[in-house]
Image 1 (cartoon, protein in one colour):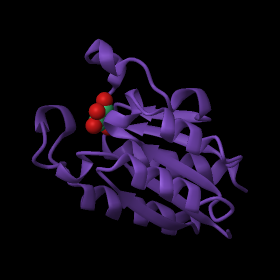
Image 2 (spheres, protein in one colour):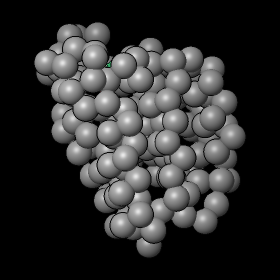
Image 3 (spheres, protein in one colour):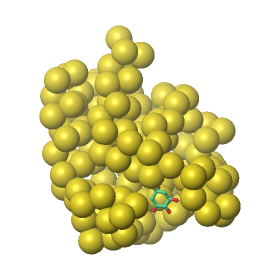
Length: 145
Ligand code: DQA
């Protein structure tokens, strides 16, 4: 397991840069991956940074990470608001789960107000764009000593 952290991104986050830039900004998922890599290097973490549009693939990756990672950072995107399956998979883990959203779902449509990740997340970083991911890694560096 060493110092490995899993960062998971859900559906449509592969379209960042093109997708609703007025909400999500113009940074791409590769920009986020790069910023996370820099932050991880600073703290001596190894990163698995993944994205999928498929709920089952995210569930499988969460299962496969069991015993392999020291924490999971997840932006489940739309599955945040719908997925009992991702909620259940995350409950397999006893390591810290950190929820991230680029926007602040609470400031948006009602259907984004409920999160299946929130009850099992140790902490959430929302509405900070790319910086939320970096803040999540910085936070983990303080709790995973
Ligand atoms: C999001 C917020 C979700 O409501 C939405 O479905 C997304 C992105 C965010 O990062 O702000 O796809 O998770």
